[in-house]
Image (tube, rainbow, N blue to C red; front, side):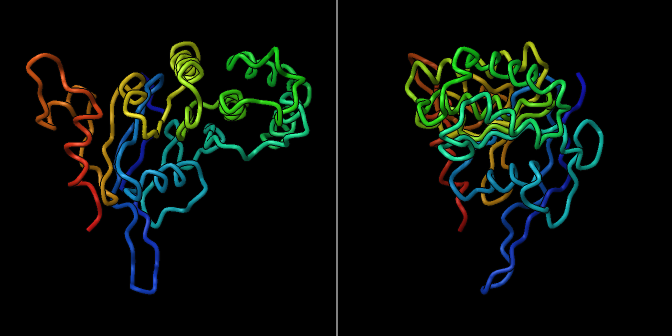
Length: 251
């Protein structure tokens, strides 16, 4: 498999009144084509800082980020932070994406076709003329993913992709994410507080605590590491994570 993302010794230090605060320390990991890797850990562990540095929203204090073996090759990254912000509510979904396609330097002759391509991937092509302010939360989350897919990025950063949506819509969004890796070969770095979602989607996990990596491996490996067991069933990822979580928090 082709390597899409390689992070080497990624570190972020903030200067505060009390001295230096190391938010992230010497982070190393890789993602290959078609893989879904999830970052999990408590609030304040450093997950958002890592994603923000990879996406180009924060400069690392030290370390390097390679996209398809090129340093800081961020034109091949799509970012979806979700939420209610980011679109013009009184404008249609189609016109919102045309605006972002222009920002992404997609040639004008290809713009309409590209917008329709990403709308179709997230099943919003029938809603292309609908105003975004009329969208449900689930539709809005899917539109964020469509925006991130403009220009066919090889790496997708997804932050809480099903946050605030109902069970049915969450399932639809997860199916879309799976198809992106299968049909488009997209590599995905996922963050979510929903352990069931992580368990359903992830090829492997990276467990972050106090700015450090404490574990890399599969869901099964983490369950085994936690030591949680039952006589009548396998332990869940959520149970295993909760058993480990106290050791991950900053002092």
